[in-house]
Image (cartoon, rainbow over all chains, first blue to last red; front, side, top):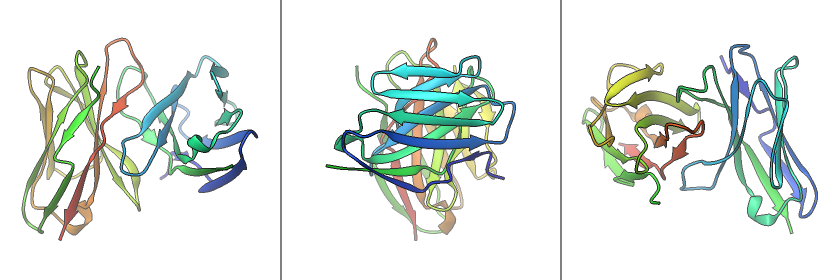
Length: 113
Length: 112
């Protein structure tokens, strides 16, 4: 049972445009959500997170939106840069105090110059 | 500040053998978690340690075990290796006042 789903395995975007990566979840007990970026042969790198008490969090070019009623979150990258090309994972936890993260399957983002 | 380090980076074993992987967290971090990444199952939580105590465990068989030492370094052990254990094993550490986990580069285990 996949509790966190990223339905788009890949996404291609032109440099300078907006990248929107989507994530859906089924477990209503999730209260903390994170996005990680992963390059081949490296561990995931933390990008941005959001608590369930918020609906938006911004950090530079990255913004995460949370729609609890739809059990949906999205990551916006504006403007997209070629260096953003990587696999993006969303992850969720039931308790921000613990480390148990449930990851989505990932979306491969390709930013074309 | 040095990041999470994992040793070895690559490992080849045969079925039936056992393996021990090591993880050194970021200095000052007392919480360590382990994840398995495979093409079929994605990233899956194995277990979590805080101050030498296992706080949480994922849905893996008892062949997978771990421990944490007083200096926060952690090891995970897989006994009686199976072909399906071939994976990238990732360790992550977390500071006391942070919600995010910081991952190491992983250990690539191949079981032949």
